[in-house]
Length: 171
Ligand SMILES: CC(C)(COP(=O)(O)OP(=O)(O)OC[C@H]1O[C@@H](n2cnc3c(N)ncnc32)[C@H](O)[C@@H]1OP(=O)(O)O)[C@@H](O)C(=O)NCCC(=O)NCCS
Image (cartoon, rainbow, N blue to C red):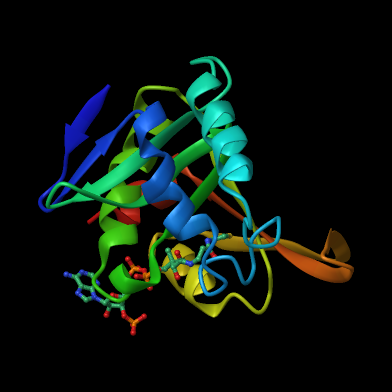
């Protein structure tokens, strides 16, 4: 499946996305608050990509994001109802994540009929919190020591957005 926004193409993942995805998942800036350390080996990204390709329509819906024919990130509901997104740092600060997530959220509520979409964000991840706030997400709780990543405990802020909240915020 694929569809376009004003500037972006969102499409299903394929095996030849490996290099483009690895450029992101191996970048310490992009991975600073991710659920795993930066990928050191291409094989780690290969496994990650295989699980992205294998997502069943009943489980989730995740998209590769392209700008001018280049893979710049991924955005989607990697597992209903949880949102997940990561973009190459060279493409931050241009509103691409927000633009890609708008149709993801439209589909979450109108196609998949989800009552709400969830996010789990490291409290230090200011850009992600800012983005989710702009999309209308609100905090529902916090928990300490939720993720052990490279021997370091990280915390979580939990956020959610429901269909009514999205209708009000939708660009
Ligand atoms: C989280 C992440 C996707 C945010 O990227 P981003 O580019 O800052 O997000 P947005 O698409 O919302 O862009 C907003 C910025 O673009 C600017 N911008 C420029 N042109 C714009 C446009 N046409 N439309 C909207 N915003 C625009 C905005 O002013 C804003 O800048 P600011 O943050 O200085 O205020 C990115 O930091 C990332 O990939 N992080 C690593 C992965 C990660 O942490 N994922 C989340 C795990 S929970």
